Amino acid sequence: MTTVTARERLVLAAVEAFAEKGFTATTTRDIASRAGMSPAAVYVHHDSKEDLLFHVSLQGHRSALTVVETASAAESEPVARLRRLVHDFSLWHAVNSRVGRIVQYEFHALTDAHRAEIADLRRDIEHVAQQVLRAGTESGAFHVDDLAGTARSILSLSIDLVRWFDQERPDQAEQVAALHADLAERMVAAH
Image (cartoon, one colour):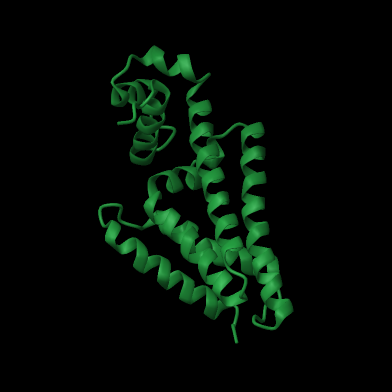
């Protein structure tokens, strides 16, 4: 049995509160209450509510980057590589849709320095997708005129599902991920 630390309880509570109410409407009292702690406990582990949001965003983006890097490295054939990347990235967003919704829609609430750090991770994710598309285009398996725009469009399939995916229906996550892999393959006119 693993013990959840006080900091982990605060992060989980923040995810629930931010996902339900949004960053602006969530108070540190809301977060502490959900974690079963006093409001002062938030400041023992984080400098501010924004620092807690940054922590959630940083963890989420690092996890998503690991997913795309792992998926990209798992396949060598271009179509299989693209399908795996999109499938796994979509599946991550479906399974983690609350975190995904927070990191996508509360980006503006981060400080300039924190936004810059998260933007770097977003560029890293896009770069992995561009590498997959470039390799497929160079091999002749794909026809892509705009690598950057196509990479963003394909990644948006996965990212946008956090807006509508029903977390209460986790059985649909695999179906959505498979559909997105099919759509991505069609988008690049794979041969």
